[in-house]
Length: 238
Image (cartoon, rainbow, N blue to C red; front, side, top):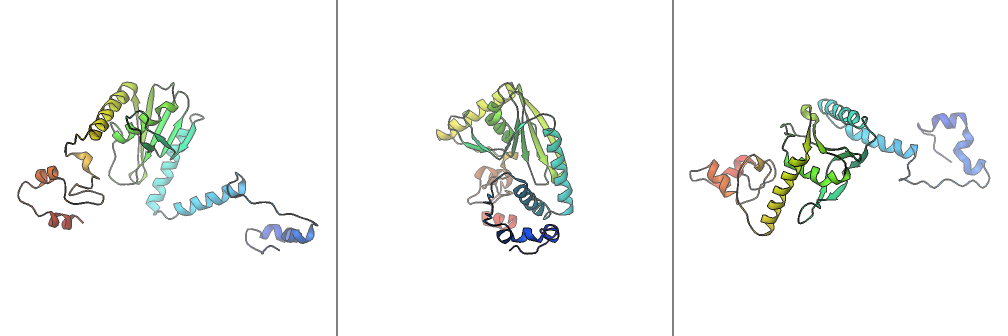
């Protein structure tokens, strides 16, 4: 017999027999519940789980997340896109293919969009963004008749929603340079070149990710040309 609960209250108050079907219907057999089945009950459970996670956000984050959803919804409404959500593909265009996972890809035979979600508060430039170009090169074959790949930065915490249409020539130039880079690395040709791209490098003395040791000699020479104490720098930046 079923428990009298909030979700069953209406049904049981109108039909008590439905709460004891094994008694009220001779030879009754309960249905087999499949948690992976595409039905209303399972979809409702999943949406409740999503809603619960979203409600862990702060009010400001909540509003930003809502704007991100609207941005994606308006884009998806333009055509009947096929949708890939964090689905991995191999970068077959590289000498040594690498598994690659974009956040969201929308595509048809002649149009493709690659969206990258960023949750930080430092604006991320969409134009000439190597990460997005890498994604574009990897997923472009899904839209064989497309003349460009549109890449998007979705940054809800600072209300940045930007796109850039990458033409074939720009994408090909990136692919040639990326191929050369991978070939150089696999042949043991390594060169230090400090710059803005070092933000998350673990050898950067001011990395925004975890730092290792020793630190990058080129950056240390550039930032601290005088004698320095690496341990003191690590301590100050931790």
